[in-house]
Image (cartoon, rainbow, N blue to C red; front, side):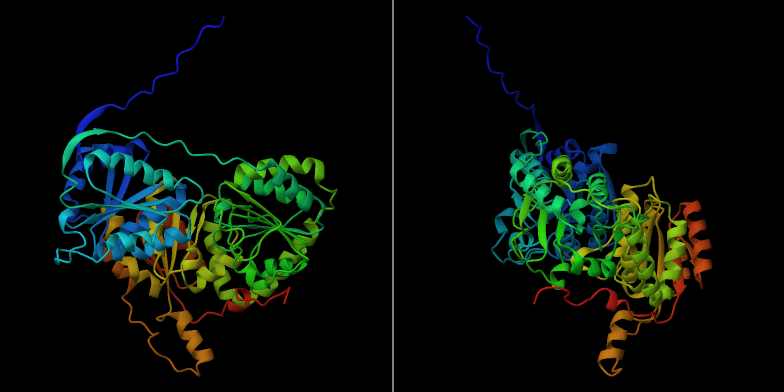
Length: 554
């Protein structure tokens, strides 16, 4: 008779007396976070004291504005793919960080916001406490995927663990926790919550087979890669080869396929290929602006997405597979061994089409000349952070990107001014590689004050400001569409070289692409905070290559 085995007893976590702040800090550390981007304030004093007591296990990088703290956390999350956290006070602090939190939602970035609150007993009563804002919890909930309030030390660890787990489940995204000023310092026995293993969704093998059959028999497959494909570069590259399929990426999917491959395409060539394709494999993307280009029965779409709601948002696809891209694509690659038709190489065709596109893009030659020297000087694994500026728009169309997570672009929020502080966070989180921030003079001064943060924490970010003395895109639209009736578009700028030097940073000026190349070489070699001003005039419009008409369907 077999001997009965006793079920294993669950090991209870050790209990120790802690403050709410200490339990929060200890849980962040246990979940692998070692940096807090923050701007301190009285509502969070006990939390910051807990950070100080944690010593070297948890570094605090303090910024000069709340938007700087939130954008730095965003940049760190995008550059590493790992959760990052920031801390600000309630009310104005929350609202100042709100644009970055909204952008984190739009970019599926795992950013945890820790927000202070007024005294617990006063929440919702309208007494007019310092930094009080009506329904702060409701405001937060509209910016993130998961939010909660910490009401005491006993629940702090579990709520922090749940928030971090939420950022790793399904579609990644931001989370937020608020805590009252008189709760951070409260003490009681606390059992720290361990990290929650990520749930791995079951892969539907029947749907994988259906996708393999559909793609395997298609004549002209197009792969569209978005931000959700960033950790599936190997699989996307292999599928591109198996299917002889070009890989289209615009902002968030750049670098998933090495930009030196003739199969790596951006919007203008992608627009042509969309009109020709009989099948599309969409990986971690909203398919926007492709949906503007039209969908009809002649194009069969297979969608892979971590968000269960996303695939049917515009039109129900032929096949929808829900989960992380890399494991699903590995199953798809295996299934294609049975179902993939023999295919002739399209390499010569794609090389020819890329050459024709480059000739078309010569209209943007002023931007391309600068981008060519940027690409030449930035190492293959260096990180480029674009901005809502003429060089940024052109980079999305024409700059080769060699590796995943090396082209950071703000997604569909496309918010002016995000760039410098976001790049600062990326550089802080990835000190092993150079990071380059590209800015216009309009966007740079949103967070240019964070040069102080770069100096205080010795973050060796190199930044370029292309200065044309205007909100250039706004000004050109007014010139071309509104009869040259100009309003609110011209700027008064500082001398950006002196501006950088006033913080103690290196300031340089480059008046040509060649001079910019030399300045970048020196900046990357010096590895110190650097600002390079490039005076420019008006640049050719990129919009004909971005806003393109419908090519199929009604």
